[in-house]
Image (cartoon, rainbow, N blue to C red):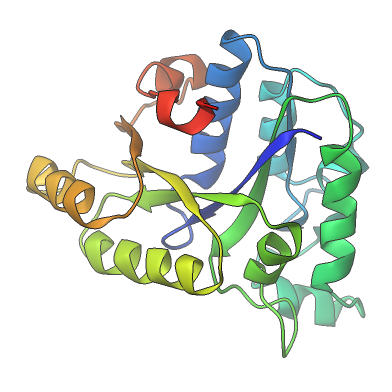
Length: 225
């Protein structure tokens, strides 16, 4: 069984996919066989493909079919449970976890499961995407979007992850827009208060280059036995 991490964010549009691509690139460069899963994606092109899922496929070195990487592809770029309702589909944590296990049981040494939005994004009236991670009992990597309000969002998310009984394996500071005021001070505060190691501080890259982003990561604390 591969080592697997669930990647979540402090909010939507904080760069989860970019960070996943950087993590996959860094792990691959260290000799790991890598795979990625985007179990639910809302917002697809005419061919039923989601841009984030395609980016994950491009950065993982174990090639999978699109349906394995993104088994639930919803057309509209809106909250997944609403998009599913509009298509007459039902989202269930146990089923999504089962689809993830299919990839986790494959040849990859490391698997990243990218969530959608933040930790408590609903799947239905009773379950959230967090329940997929709980079902799988995997460690969590938190992507912190470095912008005003990030400290509160990061601490609340970390608290929720721990209350759900999962380990926060590490966190990545990502700059999705212009560099925030007092970036270094905010980063230092997060390092003091978050109960997990900082895996990297990725600046805004335009255009984004996974290899350059990977250079800003230190995964020693993540992959150590």
